[in-house]
Amino acid sequence: MHTLAVNVDHVATVRQARLITEPDPVTAAALAELAGCHGIIVHLREDRRHIQDRDVEVLRSTLKTRLNLEMAATDDMAAIACRIRPDMACLVPEKRAELTTEGGLDVAGQSAQIVRCVRCLHEAGIMVSLFIDADEDQITAARDSGAEFVEIHTGRYADAAAQPDQDREFDRIVEAIGRARSLGLRVNVGHGLNYRNTQRLVPIGAIEEFSIGHSIIARAVLVGMERAVREMLAIIKR
Ligand code: PXP
Image 1 (tube, rainbow, N blue to C red):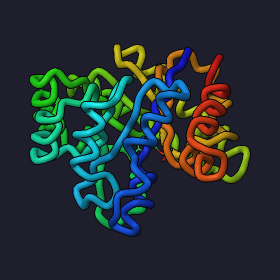
Image 2: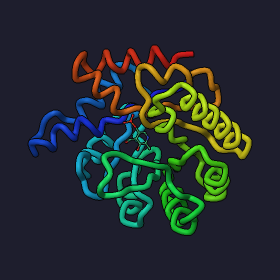
Image 3: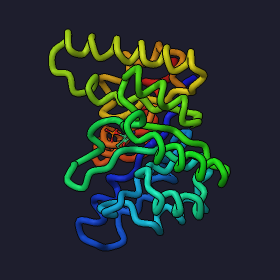
């Protein structure tokens, strides 16, 4: 069965809107675990707009499942990751003005920095995933970097308004996953996945983990965290 990792960044987004202590992403993570998710993801952005350093530290010491830390591929962030030691670090591109991570990491274009970051994380015993577009060159560069995983960016598939566009993006994802597996990379997917568009990816057996945030938190606001996670787990069960 595929696994589900729940991104709780947007619980912190609501908290930071008032700069107080609730809602607490750590409590949300515990409820997601009680509902059966397999891991928790947080993105410690350089501008600290939602998740704070302390959230990551508390999650590290309280989670019963796995902690996946999304982070920019910088030396400063690598130093934080090496101190906190998540189970996995997912390297993502980061731009100050973006609302969310917009595109995949340009591994091919900044390979020296990425390789340095991957090595540093590996030395601390942290598995590494690279968040990339469904692109042949990026997949090859990801393999060359030494990372164990790629997370294929599903945003264009998720955002496609017309069926032919969604079909084309779906085919690109399938091809990219096949290529990554043939190079020995393990594969996760994420971004923009929701209660309607996730189902179509479920038959792709090579996917290990679905990484889903916004749609689960949006649903949890209305129906509660445990129910929102259980409903998504029911979808990804093959
Ligand atoms: N994977 C990565 C690498 C991301 O940056 C994000 C967004 O933080 C997600 C998955 C989750 O995307 P969404 O919130 O659209 O489900």
